[in-house]
Amino acid sequence: MAEQMHPTTAAALEPPRLYLIHMLVFTLACAILVVVLLPDLIRAFAANAGLNAVIVATLLLGMVHSYRMVWRLFPEVTWVNYFREAPDGQESARMPRLLGPMATLLRNRQSALISPQSMRSMLDSMSSRFDESRDLSRYLVGLLIFLGLLGTFWGLLTTVSSIGDAINALDVSSTQSGTVFEGLKEGL
Image (cartoon, rainbow, N blue to C red):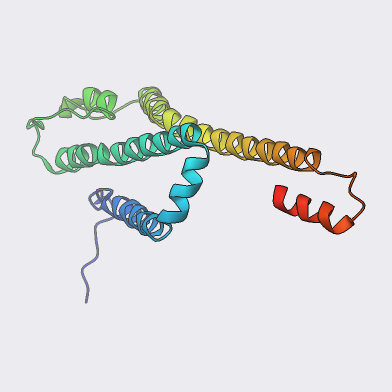
């Protein structure tokens, strides 16, 4: 018969390796797609190199920030697992950054009992810190959407302007409609 876990014993926290692997696989799939579409992407990039460079730079900055945010969870998970398994009185050599308030409260294991008010305060503090760390990611996502829309409208304005130029260049004094349509076709 299989051994059952004691109800008060919880499993150790898993590091965010799986999420990091998912991020790497998605990034690799996108990189492969970029390589496959590279000639067309270069031509599209050259249409408005300045705006497209800002979009690509923002995307790369957001990717680096997202990887960094996941990477910084590894020491936090290690600290929690070490704290749960370490004998009383023995502290981890490295204090966590994100879980700093909790580490300070739990430093003395003899007073490991925390009042509900202290727990609520600690959880609110940690929630605020996590929200602040996600703010830049949210901002970068919104900025990428804005830059994409800006590029779309810029392209539409350029298209409408060039269609207007093509119509203005038509010679309507010609009596043959074939030459007018041929001129329109060349202009477009």
